[in-house]
Length: 149
Image (cartoon, rainbow, N blue to C red; front, side, top):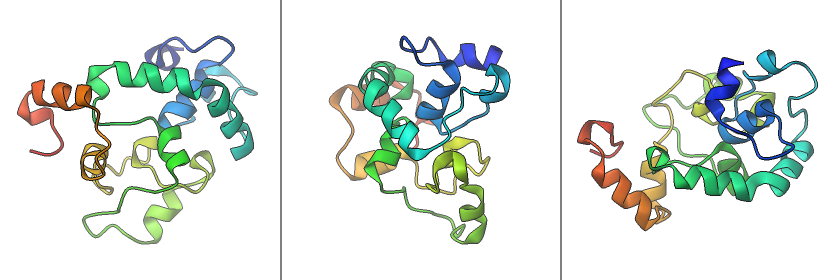
């Protein structure tokens, strides 16, 4: 249960394991929460996003520590993976992206391959998707914490 508590309070009717999957792409919490709470299909995932995505995105964006990032469901809905960098492109990356992310590569989903994709902050900046509040929060961070030093 410690992992589930770290995710934070779920919107009414959304088990912590499902919230974790929507936010991070990870299903690790399902082992702690018990069977039957994991999202099994893309259709079920999309239904949960339709019901809870607005509230979850608002909660995510309100946290200045998350400035320059988006939850997993946002990236999946966008339908565009961040570019693979540093020469890691190939079957190893695709094998790591399995059913829990619906074939969508997202290194933050617990694949332990950080640095393989362009950082979220860099991607969002490059595409003009950072909000003014995010830009202020990023500027206020110590330089060592920013992706784009």
